[in-house]
Structure formats: C-alpha cells, structure tokens
Length: 159
Picture 1 (tube, rainbow, N blue to C red):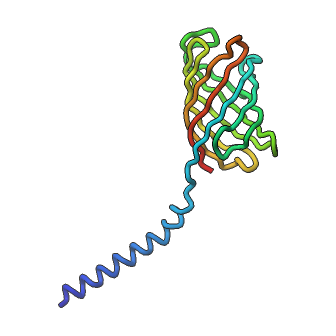
Picture 2: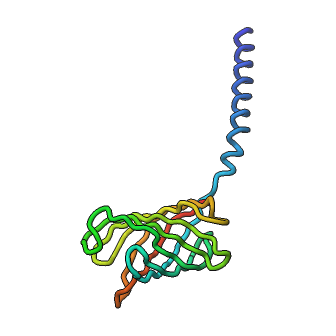
C-alpha cells in the first residue's frame, strides 16, 4: 500500500512540476518572434569607397517598401579594391522614405570581377525597427555600363 501511495505522490509531484514549468516557459515560447521572409532589391551607385549610395525596394517582407541606402563602413579582409578575388565586410544603413526609420545591415562579401555573393545580418535600427533582427544571403551584379551594381537580399526577418 505504501508503494502505491508513494507512486501517487510522485505522480502528483511530477504533474505539479510539469505545470509549473509550462506556466513559466509557455508564455515565453508564445512570445517568440516568427520569421518572415524578406526580399530586397537595391541599386547602388559607386560614389567612392566606402560611400556608395543607392535606393531600395522591398519586394516581400515586413520592412518599409522603399528608401535610400548608404554604405557607412568597409573593411577589407582579403585583397583590396583592385584585387580578384576579395573578401570584405560592409556596414549599410537603410533609411525608409516614410517616417525615416533606419535599419542597420552588416554584410560579409566575397567577390571577383564585379560579381559578389554575401551573407547579411540586420543588427537593429531606429524607430519601429529598433529591435529588428534578420539574416540571409545575397548577390551583387554590376550595371552593364559600370558605375554601380544591383544588390539582391533574400532571407528572414524577426521582429
């Protein structure tokens, strides 16, 4: 009899512990941000390193529809401006046309011959984008006549 009473107490204790854990972690799990797909296309004009400027359009995702973008920092890791291949990091600031909220991107770029592949991460922003986080990959294709390139970003944003 003792053993079934002991089992019943152990079962009640385990159930109580499970409910306690669920009550603590349940709301946390429910509050986790859900990833949303994003696709951004940006035309950049080469003004001079690292001050390339351009515009962007969000094709899909929870980011403003359009705005301007500026390279705000650049660090060569392998090679330099005249090297092929090269690797660099680029800091970019996207500024929305409406409300002028900003989003801060960091890219790790591998390139050769004007074509680039990159990974990106969003490190936050201002206004409604203050807690924004995102990540993905992208590519750069130079303009046919030179003087700039089109960057395409695809990935996920967590807000």
